[in-house]
Length: 241
Image (cartoon, rainbow, N blue to C red):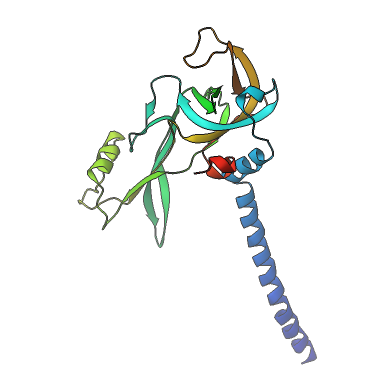
């Protein structure tokens, strides 16, 4: 009897410990996922670098600037909103059911960009993202979204977008597919933040409204990639919208 009582007491004492350990493990995993999330890594990295005007950048120094994004050439157009931009990211997902559970499966992703300027109060920095090899990391705020589902008819504009990417908005039986779309862009004139290795380049041709023979650029090197984001929390306080 004493042995049985001891075993029962041990089991009773062990159960709360196991539950506590499980809760701690879940909390730690959740924290690590949050801490190493791409957005949080960018915020932490940029928070350690002081803001500088373009005219104060020092060659080969890891620096950041904030200012208005301006196009170098004919701007891009965002796929859904049609807004003029220098960078956009989009994705289309569909809901997939697996028995009792369901999840979102990405069926289309697209990211396009071009060279652009950052105007820091009249001083310009040129940014040249590259995809081969990829010389940047980027986080754009999702500022346009659309969805459709059983009781949620897609708008004509959303249908046109889906067909553009060869996605049927309805099933074989005529029901709406459960789809969602997200779009983030760097719009012309939007305030953004970019970090990279500062360089100064000679201008082969003069630029309108820019009376200098050299222009600053932020670049990547073997270890440090360009960081490009429109997150409002990394802008100087006076520039946050």
